[in-house]
Length: 163
Length: 158
Image (cartoon, rainbow over all chains, first blue to last red):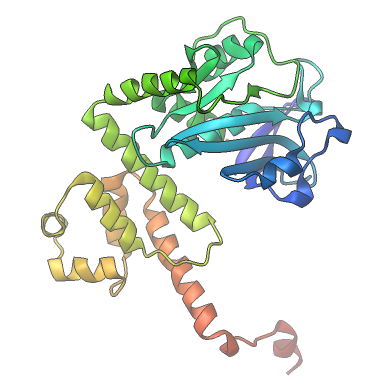
């Protein structure tokens, strides 16, 4: 069980990250940028949705992972339109939980790239990834989160215990 | 993590697509390959052990039909750590033949052994028991499904 933060009342809300199903896919009509139904059907990739337990029909964030030459790539990460922005977002920790989940997946792969989560950042988010999630800028906008930083994220976002 | 004055995203899309196959992508992979080679043997082993822990957790949570014995996970741990089964059996005061049975699923993991494994491999002792219980329940529900025709309604009304 993972938890995301309801910014309105400051309470943690139970959530889960599940393998995406077509019937749950959010659409551009709802303000999303990508056609997630199409992305689910792409070969050689896995798509996951983050949903709260109490509102399982609403997707709070979506993630597409790919493995290329044994390296895990966070190909797409999108959070729901209502979770964007510093002040008006409904839930916080959505991106953090999905990034931590991707780090956990990177530890599960075999080979030399085990424990490296790689991705291409948007130009204006490089500092955000570095400062908030311990990512390292490697080449151009290509970044990675290594095992040690990934482990911290897993503990912070996926193994949070309610007191 | 260091605290910077970073700006929170103002758009829901947080990544761009990776340019797989380009020269820069290959260069990026080479950078990571070097980073990977810089890891100590201890850290490599730590990552592999954590990977196994996650594999066990995911197996327990999943609904996949293929049964994986807790003994198979134990075998993977010993292989990763390069510990011969005989040496391991001696260390935990178990006959090598009994360890072999345990790995094959012919002998159950008891609570004491679950504690020993949890202690040695830094995972939850309950996970070993839970995986075993999950497998047993699955086996019973598949082989004896016609035996379970109980209903609370019947019980109350008989």
